[in-house]
Image (spheres, rainbow, N blue to C red):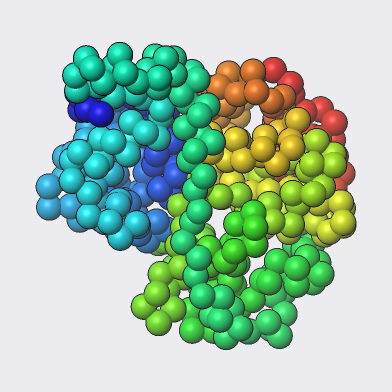
Length: 367
Ligand SMILES: [Zn+2]
């Protein structure tokens, strides 16, 4: 099958670009200047500064630090990411195929015989259908790390700052939260739905590092980087799949800590929370939740705006509306949205206690 690079580029929407950046751990955000992301073009996820821009009118990325050739398109970025994150040497054809496949865009057949002979053609003619099929086929299994490393972390240190915030020791034990003295970091292992160990993230206690690298970053121990594409997994789903199936509901937080708080307040046995580990939910994550038996996906993102109708407010509501529109035919989506601003700026709905959480839960918005 043949893919036309220009044609596929034309079919890609800005949401598609955003989604790829999210899947690759760039933690993208929409701004007036375009999409801003961490520099995953020359860094592993969690390592770089937020200096990679995507401009919709030119269809090009620009890396404002580090890249020798600072201007490139989505396919060139795919080649870079494949090399850094998947350890694969992609050529342009591979990259175009990867992107087309990811969004279920069909290529053209090389000659007419192939068309008339192929039963597949009927399927390929229907974009919606192929998208559905490709998703099921895209049964991604992330790289598993050797979990021996977890035995070498310290679990006897009391994580006092988190205990003070209301996270119970029981919740931390279940999540195998530990401490890595070498990096002065709280360690958060990530598992896939089947409990395979796929990543290890750290929350630094050193203020300078937190500002420079962001709050959470993958750990590097003995030169091994324990990262994974954040948009291709859901934190805590290995513990909550059964409850989600039973209740038909799931609460999606942005960060791991919110899941720990949820378990602490409502009990491990009642936990229905997951974290998408960023400020957006990927199509892959939504599909995973539907497959897990969720009938309602309750989006519980941080209050990322300072005033009603400020620019951040507009971006957030636009993001949530798009999310709703994209999946409204597949699943009920509701939103815990703090329009009365009872929680602080950038707070997660569960950060400030059970009462505020329950209020936001009861008043959640169904579009
Ligand atoms: Zn770069």
